[in-house]
Amino acid sequence: MNRAAAAIFLAVLCSACPKRIEFGPEGQLTDAEVVYQRVRRNQDNVVSLEGDAKLRVESPQQSGTIGMFLSVTRPALLHLETFDFFNRPLASLVADGTRFGLYQTETHTYYQGPASPQNVSRFLPVVLPGEELVAIMLGQVPLIPPERMTLELDTKEGVYVLTLHRGTARQVLQVHPKYLRVVKSQVHGVPGYDLAFDDFLERGNLIFPGKVELIAKQAGTKLQLRYQQIKLNGRPDLTLYELTPPEGAKVVEVDDSGRELPAGAPESPAPPVPGS
Image (tube, rainbow, N blue to C red; front, side, top):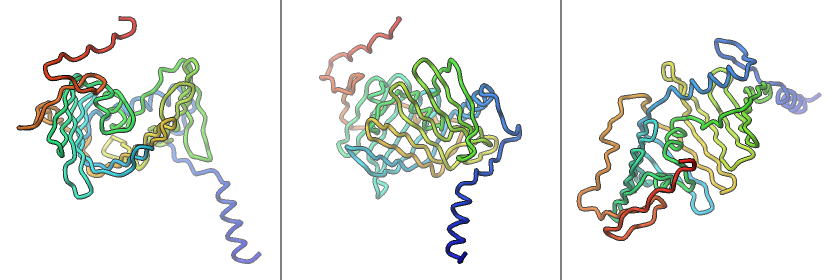
């Protein structure tokens, strides 16, 4: 066998071999409930983040990358600033769980109104509730409440596969065997989106993904957030969440659908909560 053939044979042979799996201090886990609880604990211990990131958007409407400064604190405090290629400010959005404010630099206009999913997602081509958006930015996966769950070990990919079932809904989680953090989440049976996490950082006893991806297949949209310099679980600067229009800005009131209201008109009431 010549050298080229031998190299090809070894490459094929190695590609078929299962990955060497490095488990955490507890060794290999075989109980689905234990893995589920470890995942919840490990992602819930990050409560705030502040720093810089790059946001990559791919959608039928637009594609491109912008710089961001962000400060997010659970459950729904949100401060986002976007910048162009030359680091010039484009817009800033603040939400406190009840109200939101959006300042657009080019038009010197400040939009304000209820912190509805349509309003807090104005930077994005997908609509997410504020609490869900904050959770995803903190590297967390919204989990369906399981009626039952199963656990497998995928030796080829080197991950646990934890599947949560609730009625017709199914959420398949690929879980890092050492960090016990979700690396991929896929939802089936109900409308939803997929999540992927990578480039994990170790910050003391915290494990945090440096890259977050959201894929909305039906909308043909992918968002990728790459963190650069960030601080986790620091004391939040609450002044970042103050809803104050910049001096001299034109102030526009919007309803919970993001529609502009006539000057002096009351906001439309929020839709009733089912069962209330």
